[in-house]
Amino acid sequence: MTIMRKKRVLLVLFVAFVLFLFLSSNWMSWFYPIHYKDEIREHAEMYDVDPFLIASIIRVETNYETSRESRRGALGLMQLMPDTAQWIMDTTGVPKSSLELIRDEPDMNIKLGTWYVHRLGEQFQNNPVAMIAAYNAGPGKVKEWLREGTWDGREQTIKQIPFGETRHYVQRVIHYYRQYTKIYGHF
Image (tube, rainbow, N blue to C red):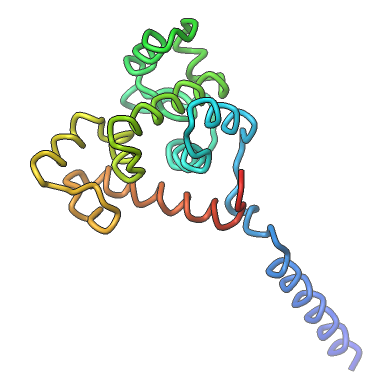
């Protein structure tokens, strides 16, 4: 009888713990953390970009792991191509940085990546779905798809994006964006 009583007590404690997790207002943040919030907030505010969009891009690109370099050579948290990073520094007047710094320093990478997202917003009339697609496939490709009618830039027609990688990328970024906004409410 005492063994059954112990099992019941353990079961009650377990159920209480699970209920606490689910009723706690921020338990989902354990599964959807946002790292580098200060850097994201600062640069998103500076370039008038939704910080949740930047956090979602980083989550999909590198899951917040610094010093990442892709097989294609994309660098850092936001996976910037070296030529793109160089162009951003030339265009914005940001002091030149080495590729190692762009890869390894979160603040610099987020600054350059956030400016780039801002620039994509200008090119695509702040259509976040088209901006996300352009971040992955390049603005030239997305403009071509829109011009030729291959894709209309809407979330409802993501399945029409010709590149499977970009289609999946856009879906994942939107998923994390929705989760972040639902969990955190404000940045």
